[in-house]
Image 1: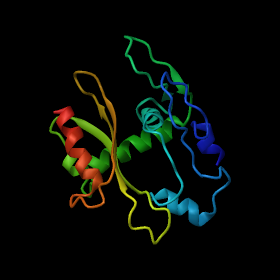
Image 2: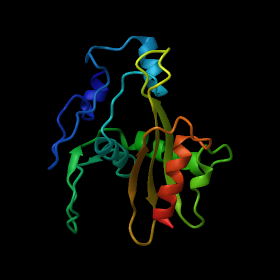
Image 3: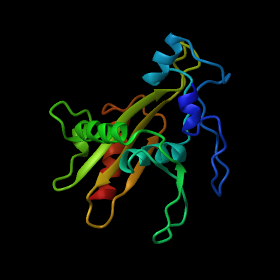
Length: 184
């Protein structure tokens, strides 16, 4: 799991507010193949701080470099948190794939599409179950996105909402409608 450690997992994020540390296993030990697969689709032990997630997504718009998160914008100031977190080629490919999630023929986030604006994004759902039998714990709906070529300046938005398990549109689509209102 060295690759996750290299992009800031299991490390305290240098940020002016106290944040939970992103981690990939509650025991911080290597994952079995089954647990790794479960984690890949939101059923495992991956815990990601939303501010850290924003930094990860920033790499897909910055040639593989993760931008250090900040609270207050200062003109011309951009610090790199992890240089070459991903290769430029991998970041470019992920950016193209994320655009297809919004604009492609089989887009799962086509409801995020805004005429005249290129948006790269990813839907996500994570169950907070403590076991397979757990029916009481909630579900998180995620939508993370960034704009490309926006006249007023590009934006990166990480959206997450809790307890969307009974939402008929799905958790991601609930948060997409909120994010879309910000961008229009």
